[in-house]
Image 1 (cartoon, rainbow, N blue to C red):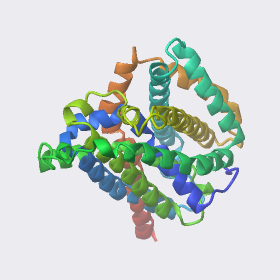
Image 2: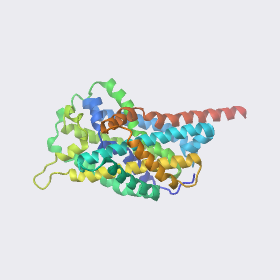
Image 3: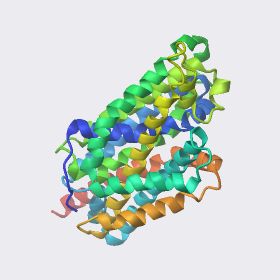
Image 4: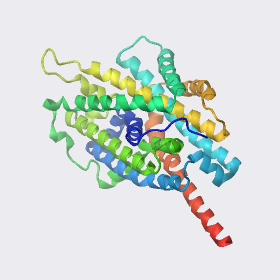
Length: 364
């Protein structure tokens, strides 16, 4: 399928970074604190390293097939029937991630600021913005992310460093948490936090030529560094027993900032940052699902899929009975096994490509 626009190298890196750091604004840091204890930030660094290595097969696969997306590569290697299952798995991966993000953001919006708002109305507001962004296309989404990304990251780091009067280095000890073995094992599992980097394989023709490896690795490194630094500063403020029980650790950090009568209650800065980051993630997820369907069916336009994708995403978001169940599915299933479709499927395609090349060589 012909891509509608091209995006620059720096803009693509920002797009990947913003797509990956969204979990910071939800409950995931607290879950990581429960699993990694005082070494939660080190677990995230291990997960980042694993993701950097796991992404290399995807980059190599895409470089072998210039101007083709992973769906089109699957068509060539697996055939129409095999590629149907392959495309369906990738579509369901982004559907599950996007719907869970939508449900958690809508629920937390009610918790933080709009207590009497119906959950369906909160979801509809997110999805209206996502539908408009999808209609405008990748270039519009990317430019919005490029402008807002610097502001979001700056405000996030500002909120994390302003509570420095409350920092206690004792909260970081023991540095190894539950031990080196547990830290490495948990880091290996939590590499699924970076599953959304698979988006590069879907928008590959829109990227600068030959830049997929640098975009992916740089985006993974920056997002991992930002998340590890955020969890590190949060653990300096709260002991791990408190940290692991929080529903929104980043929001709670913003609430304790106090520098006199005129510099307090800075969660008012955090809330719009938080909502816009969620809108970016939902918009990008819906756009990628539209592209997957378009590439699989070999259609020239993706816009007819916007409304069906938005409706399916909202329906899937209501499957969890409550926010606790949504958080559990996200943190204990998606963020544990999400690396299998994100990194495992491209790796299998790469092995199949090497095998096909070897077979052709023997025939010759």
